[in-house]
Image 1 (cartoon, rainbow, N blue to C red):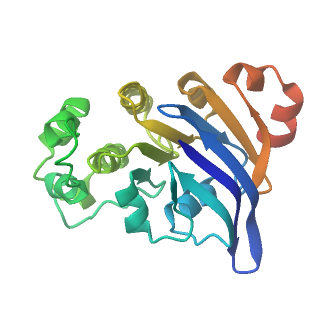
Image 2 (image 1 turned 90 degrees about the vertical axis):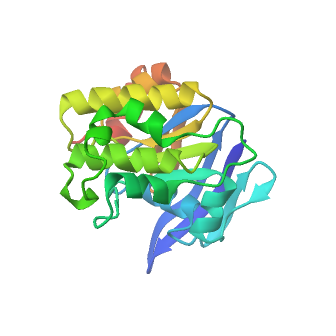
Length: 234
């Protein structure tokens, strides 16, 4: 369904992605693991067009997305939840959700604002509150819901549990699992390895801007050498 081949990207003279290869099958959930600075978040930004790739291919079905503007990539069916959340501070919760909605007249089962409130009842309570006044956890809920309302086929989520209380993390993990069970393929970047491994079917370990290991969660847990070299903090 989704294939990245030899994706490269630079920040100025810094070569951050050095030849990234990824495959996400239909309805599959995969994670990108790696140390800070390995290129995981840049990979999502390059796929989304927020960082312009300097080489490589992003193939989504039969369509080439590399080099397109972010809004065109979103319209193609890719949702993105950035680590920074980027809610629209001066709009209410419900206005943020409306802003994320996509015209899905041809889709018999689009996501709805009511469904988002069912996922996160706290957002229903805060529907008239300006997004800038939300807590970090509430902003993360809102950003995930706003992305879902674009009706993506593939959703990319960058550090969904970063800085959140354990109870909110538990809720987010259950929502992510349910969204995937409903047929949305997902790429998760997550620093907390054990949370990621409980969610996904396959893992990619990123080092120096490329894939250095691909396998199952069980394969990661059983490979001490890969964990020591590419994941554990010395």
